[in-house]
Amino acid sequence: MVLAAPLRTFAVVIAALVVLAAVPGTGSADAGRFVWPLDPRPAVSRQFDPPEQNWLPGHRGVDLDARVGQTVVAAGDGIVAFAGVVAGKPVVSIDHEGGLRTTYEPVEASVVAGRRVTRGDPIGTVVAGHESCVSPACLHWGLRRGRDDYLDPLPLVERPVIRLLPL
Image (cartoon, rainbow, N blue to C red; front, side, top):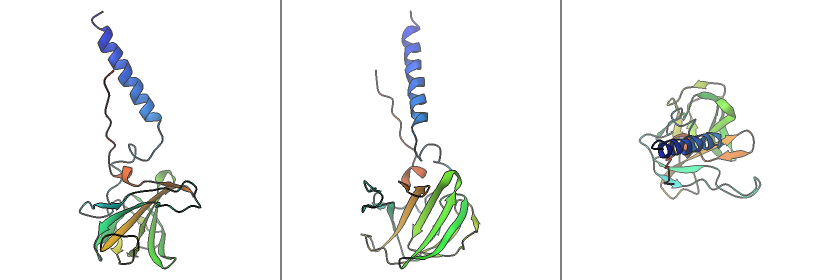
């Protein structure tokens, strides 16, 4: 029975991987297909804080430290869904495979709706005016699946750390 312990460990690892593969999310499958919308990699000044219900207040994205005039790039391949002003703020939205949409604000667009973009393509520049920003300028980066499912965009660019715990 020398092989019993290694086989049991192997079985536990396989079972854990099967469970992790079944967990829905935006991270593991999308990490690598997306890049940070700012270069160099920005600090996150405000984290994703979804509301309990879609009509309640919350923070439906992350705020990234930026500087006015800094180039914003498409985080992933897609088609520009919107480039214009919403509620007095300049916004760019990009539709990606799998029903994902990324949004970037406040961004003075250098693209127009309908344009196909590739990961890393410039889409505009950061402008002043993001009122909840604690830095001189911020890029609000949002992610949504479908119409109402707001998601944290950070798993798009950060690979999750998986640790196996001892038995």
